[in-house]
Image (cartoon, rainbow, N blue to C red; front, side, top):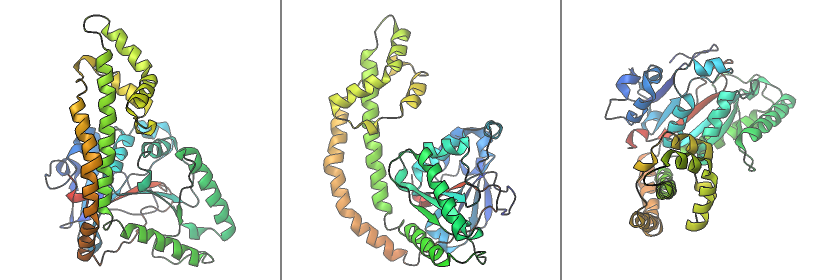
Length: 352
């Protein structure tokens, strides 16, 4: 991987343990030993910008790092990619354990594409960490203003009332330019590394949490599809009824929420769901099977609690095998590609 001050990262790069070498994207998605087969759906334009860099390093025995392309400003750059960048990021967000959004202290603007990327991460807020990098390049007074500007910008994009945690520091091995905040940077880096080192011990709980989340989403999806199927006429007026149902999808959400006691936050994004439904044939939808819903409820209320009781034992066994786990950061860019999304996945190669 080439690293430098100019725009260097032009592809999704998987950094993982293995015999040193680079595996191109088309070969990577057909490798049954790696969990990237679903990425083939994004086409050759994406696969030509996707690679795996293998290296022998003890750090990578327990984690896999996904380094993303730089996110540039302007509509032309987004269209010229030739693939759905936001959809790719969302796929990785669903499968990783930690997402790090990296900002430079002197480059805080959030482009339209980066805004779409951040919005696509909604639902995975517990995985996201914000890092303000290269904070040693400015003095204490400027750092205070930069931190405030970053929080203000993030507040407009994240759309949540909770205050997001921002780790401040200079994550490279060179001397600090302004060392007045050295103690602050050291404490912040320790907090961030502690968070990353906790990934192995909490892996089992996160996997269980993801399974619960997917089960709830599948249950809501079944309610929606079942309702649409039930409302469709059997002979005439199908297209008209389909469009009517799509236009009234919010009212359908409200009805399902009241009838089945579903939280409004469990429903898929309205505009996204309407876009998908417009391309579907409602007559091919399956009817709702209450028996399957009951099985999901049994899993959530009876089987999942049993698994949760086993998690402390699994975590202790994992910690004993990975007692020497550590993590380090390398700086991927110097100034131009200053906004990046780095996704860290513990034991990613073992994920189905």
